[in-house]
Length: 423
Ligand code: C5P
Image 1: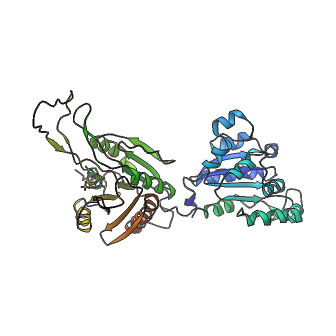
Image 2: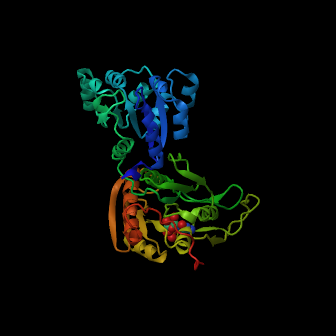
Image 3: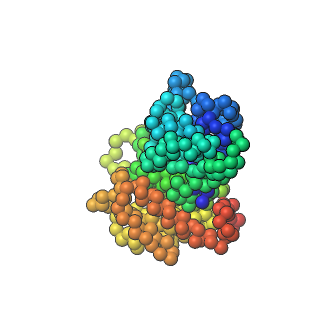
């Protein structure tokens, strides 16, 4: 379950409580699970632990001040709020809970909590009398009614010598509760390589052959794979799309460049998803000068490009390979043929005919997934949603195929070196 934290961005708020020293352990464990962590400290927290401690443990600068122009210019409170996938305030002091209930924005942590719409969890830590005081009880009740999650507190011996409810919940419990906020970790620990967009095959210095692919589907898949906890490499042809967060992107132009870039990365790839609309042919020579329109007829010889998908499968048979089939007719038939001819594990087939609503440049698409033992229709929906569904099916098929290699749930690496009998 903890793999759900892989690639998640956690903002940890630390407030003024003796339990602040345990927040270091929270940071350490979050990072162990693959989460990225940024820490915001209140002024009172810095009386207990130094920012340097959290900077060293999180590997990121620690944020303290709301009205610091330098800090705001680097990453202001709104950017911090947008950056996070979840906010955990641990320890959360009685004063912090009171201010949160009032909706104050008088320090950086409060301003970020107000400006954010991601899940907010608090781990109260205070003396047991402070915890059972009607004011604190009332604050907690109101905060819960607004959707703030409370983790703990636990009961036991306290720093002040009292015994009772008010101890901050143990770091391992805090992060296991936090992990439950995230839906999947279906691809945690795996390296996924996605190709996307069109390729351009140069004819002369200003002309090229290409196609209508926008890259949207491939980019959505890269994002969905990150959400599912994978490490993602995206190799893209020329598109005008922003790189999804945490994705490692490499831009290429021609099919040959895409082929070279893919092969250079394949060493530890577990899942290859070829969404790119790779040009099947390229001009046999790229002319040094622009072609003049002197002749009535112009003959261009095209030569075949390497097939990236089938080469990947041939050389790396253990890699789970998914191909796309964009068809204008006989979808089912061509998809099954492609599955067989390219010897891949799954084909995602979609219509790209003139009369279809989804496809190349659209934000929507519908897909028929085909694998050896079955198939699944994914009806018309946004490419973002479709990508999540596709990733979930890929993860299921991947684990079915590797079931025998699994012992327990903790072996998540199937990275396989190039087979020796290839090519
Ligand atoms: O053979 P066809 O081009 O229809 O196959 C489409 C699938 O093969 C897509 O997944 C595409 O990314 C991949 N492909 C490739 N290299 C090529 C041609 C297609 O990887 N040269």
